[in-house]
Amino acid sequence: MTDFSVSGLWGTALLSPADQAHFFFIMDSLIPREFVGYARFLLSTIVSWQSWGVPVIARPLGYQTFFKDGSEPTGLGQLVHQIDRVEGHGRTFSIAVMTDGDPTMLYGEQTIQGLTQALLQ
Image (cartoon, rainbow, N blue to C red; front, side):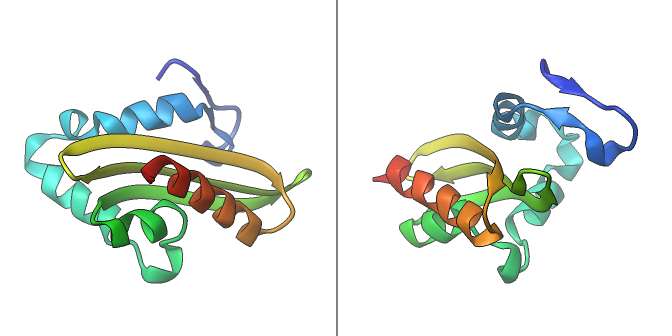
């Protein structure tokens, strides 16, 4: 990672969307071979109530998604982010969307879904 820092607890780590997208794109080569299947299983079987954003748009279109997401309130509003590796139709790509200042969690989810819809059309 080229743009990463931690000040205090791990939860305060700062990282860029570019670093996260790059990590998810090459993740299979970074995970020990014997654990790649398990890691892919964990990142693709997130409980349904946490599967918002990219998976909601990509899965019905025949793509498999591997992702990590999160949200929390900040001084600006709601922070909402999601990083995905998307595979299907003969291609693999990754996307990272990190927002802050969203008025609600739903607003952030819909922002990510809108970006995904635009990319996959």
